[in-house]
Image (cartoon, rainbow, N blue to C red; front, side, top):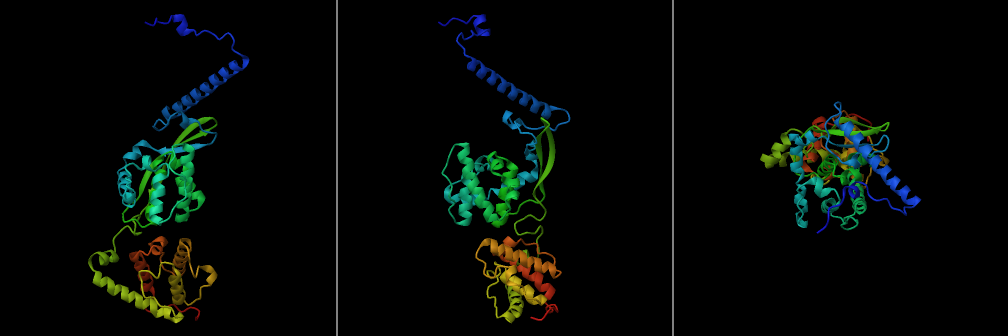
Amino acid sequence: MATSPSPSSTLTPKKKENESFLDKIGTMGRKKKAKEVSELQEEGKHAIESPTSPTVPDIGPEGYQLAENEERSMIEPTSRENPKLIELVQPILVINDELADHRIIVKDIEEDLFDGQILQKLIEKLCNVRVEAMEVTQSEVGQKQKLRVVLDYINHILGVPPLWSQHKWSVDSVHSKNLVAILHLLVALARHFNAPIRLPENVVVTLLVIQKVDNTLVTRTVPEEITGGHDDMDGRGERDAFDTLFDHAPDKLNVVKKSLLTFVNTHLMKLNLEVTDLDNQFHDGVFLIMLMGLLEGYFTPLYQFHATPTTHEHRVHNVKFAFDLMEDAGLARPKARPEDIVHQDLKSTLRVLYHIFIKYKSGPSQGVPM
């Protein structure tokens, strides 16, 4: 039976007789490091628990070790209970339909998507491509390398500027399971690929931002918009005549399509061009550009758009340019997104063409003769 240690052996450990100078330095360094960590924890605790600071979750000692002027943000706990946020997360889980072939079920977007593995499978399915990224890894470095490859590819497909994507869904923010960053990414993918869901409008959460200023942690709260108004997937916040035609009057819809086809060809035939399929022939923006030039009486220089677009980016550029021409002609900018036209969303295409038809049905503007 072991004997109980004496009080002296418990409270005053025996000093090593042969402890070298380097050993002492190492011991002092460890004590200093422990003291610094303790001070940082106390600093963070004071900043968070002080009466003038908002309540924040315990993010652990590593959360407070910030460089001067560095800041981190997280969703304020009460925002997680926001009914609109909860309402937004549910339709986002439609990604499970895309992942069914891989027998993958996402239950928690924070826990399931942070390492890039499922995001890779999702974008491969949506784009029918193979993203060359490293296989499953448990190391943080490996996970971030994989996630960076996947996010770089997604950003390329979405056509978003690097600084913008870095602000919305950086590798670090996604890997740290930042709910807001992951939602920004999934909402952008849902919009881009025209997911068959309606997103709730005006979803705004409160972010808690912690920044180190003059060696002191300062906290503030800021609102972060995840969806704005009219954010359902067909680009409108209210139903219109085309919704009714598609849902309840397919015969009348065909009549409208024939009328628009006749209107378009009446003008395009002046350039020996003809549209035979409204569903598919406007997705690259070329005919829209040509049509606006004919209706307004000018020739659009070929260097201003891609006459033979070969990439998604070319087609989006063309449609955006056509929308600009409509605005220049006095039309309101279409509510449809350029990506909707590029993805051959018939309802969006018909809305844009009808928008043009209403203005020019009595004849083109009197501009410069062709």
